[in-house]
Length: 259
Image (spheres, rainbow, N blue to C red):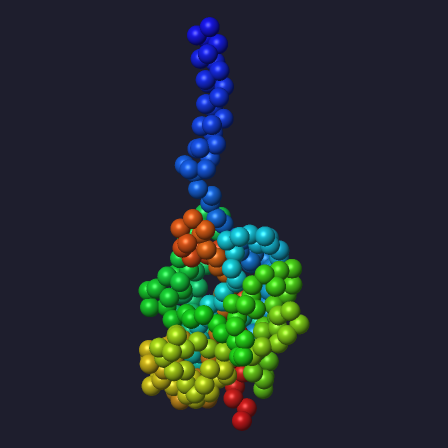
């Protein structure tokens, strides 16, 4: 009789324990998917196509994709090929190569997941900022509506650089760091004298630009924008921001001012 009663208690308590353990003791692990580097197709130094898959569809943690950018001053007299790759980053600007060497281990990584990308891109004196768009909220544009579609970036000559998403084309805009600095001469991605002048490369004005020492005045000073894309979301348990690993979109040469 006692044995049967003991068996009954065990039979009753085990599923109860599993229910309690499953709901109270273990939290879900929230993960968002990155854009594989193999899904990004750069063309020369003026265009890139980014294929966004649908792996984050239905992912309650996903919010939107984010793009980090930084502008680097280069030498117009340097031998820079029309097709830019990591092997030419040092020729453009040594700091560009150093920054990419810091970031590249995270690209497509299966182990370096969960790093705070804001610290990765902006810590250690790195001057990356969040890309913005003219007349549109980039977070809304790069949300679930871009699943299973292409983002197209164009830095063609004599045109303002743009991003095309969902059939709409937007001019790219530089950040103001929540109005903590004032880009010179304006917020467009166009190579001008004011953009690359040493006097303006500081935390008050062009805080998104990295100088290259030893260059003469503009127009010897050309500029390039390095851009990386990642997914961002929120851990529904801790309400903390979470990130995917980043991928390099391209290093674009900014078109020279044409007016």
